[in-house]
Amino acid sequence: MKQPQVVLELEQIAVAPLEQGRGIGEALIRKSLPDIAVQLAERGATLDAVLISTRTDNRAQRLYRKALGAEVGATIPSLYSADEVIMVARDPLRSNYTPSDARNASRLNQPSRPRACGRGR
Image 1 (tube, rainbow, N blue to C red):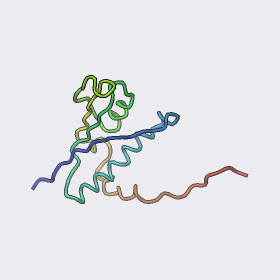
Image 2 (image 1 turned 45 degrees about the vertical axis):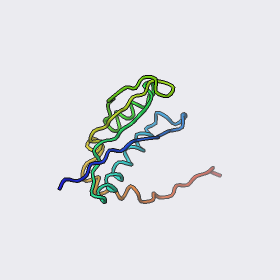
Image 3 (image 1 turned 180 degrees about the vertical axis):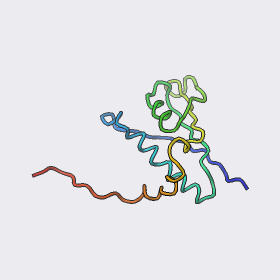
Image 4 (image 1 turned 90 degrees about the vertical axis):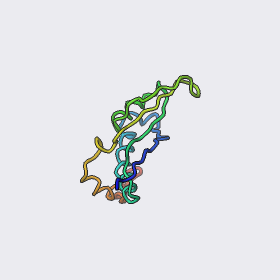
């Protein structure tokens, strides 16, 4: 029997304007995918695609292409306050990690070592 395939929607992701362009958004997406794959596998399913809806003038389209391999599937004129695109990432896991990463995905959820914060004296 074939496993059910799931299509997820990436609804909201945001990085503070002063922090944009530093790879934070890409890291958030890439590090979440193995965890998603593990959770779906526990339910007997696999991730088939990720859908993203964003404005046509949103620079984040580059992020979705790079991190997920997403491509524009459709453009919806005058939706909300501007034109909107629907991007589709088919088989988003293929370009993001290897099967050995899936086995080690649980390590991503382990707490990291605490780091010292604050001002030196």
